[in-house]
Image (cartoon, rainbow, N blue to C red; front, side, top):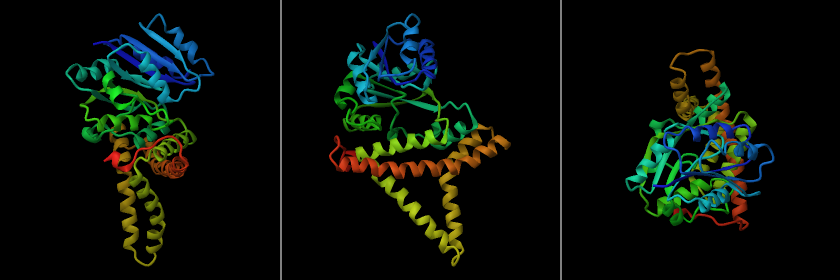
Length: 324
C-alpha cells in the first residue's frame, strides 16, 4: 500500500519545522510527502527545502494564491499513492500517527478518522483548547466530522466525493466529509492516531478564526439550526434576566443554563490540571466564559456574512436536504 502524506502551508515559518520533524519521526514513514505552498512571504519555503535530505520523497509545489481546498486537491492530484494521509500546518504528529491511521484502510475501510488534541504553550491556550476542542471520550464516531488535520482516505474516496470544494475558503473539510458520508463510504474511527494542534495564541486571533469558520458555514449553508439556537439564546438571556426581578426562579434557570453551557470546558480543564485547584486552574476557569462569549460573538457576526455571500450567488452551496 503506497501512502502519500499531503499538507498545505502559507507563512508557517514558526511552525513548519515541528511538523516536518514529526513526519521524519514516524514509525511508518510515508512513501512520499507532497506539500503545496500557497504563496508564503516568509521563510516557509526555505525551511521546507532544508528538510529535503531528511524526509524521503519530499516534494514542494508552489501555487501562489491557492486556497486550502485548491492546495489539497493539487497535492492529491500530484501524489502517486493509493492512500492519502492528510494533515495541516500548525500541528505536530504523534510518532505512530501514520502507522495507526492507515491501518483500517489496509483492512478495507475507505476513510480513517484520526483525532487531534490541544498542544498549548500558555495558560490562555490551555483554556482555549479546553473551550473549543473535545476530549476523546466525547466523540460519537458515527456522527464525528473529522478534521483534515488528521484523516486518511483512499484515492477512490477522494474521487467519489469530488475532491475538496474549491469554491469554499473555510469549512472545506466539513463539506468534503459530508460528501464522503453521503456516498456511503466505510468510515473507521482511530482515536490513537493523534495530532497535536496549538490553539490560537490571542483573543484577537481566536475571534478571527471563529469568524471565518462561521462565515464558511454561512457560505455552505451548514448548521443553520445551531446558529439560530445561538441567536435565540443571546436574545432570550437578557429577557430572562429582567424577568428575574419579578420572578426569582428565572435567575436560577439562567444560572443553571450557564452552568450547563460551561460544563464541558470546565470538566476538560479539571482533568488537565489533575483535579487539584490552584491559581492556574482558577485563572483558566475564569477565562472560559470570556472565550465562550467571544467565540459566540464571532460566529454570530461571521455567519450572516457568509449567508449574504451565498444569497448573492457566490460559489455553490449545500441544501438542507443534502445534510440529512
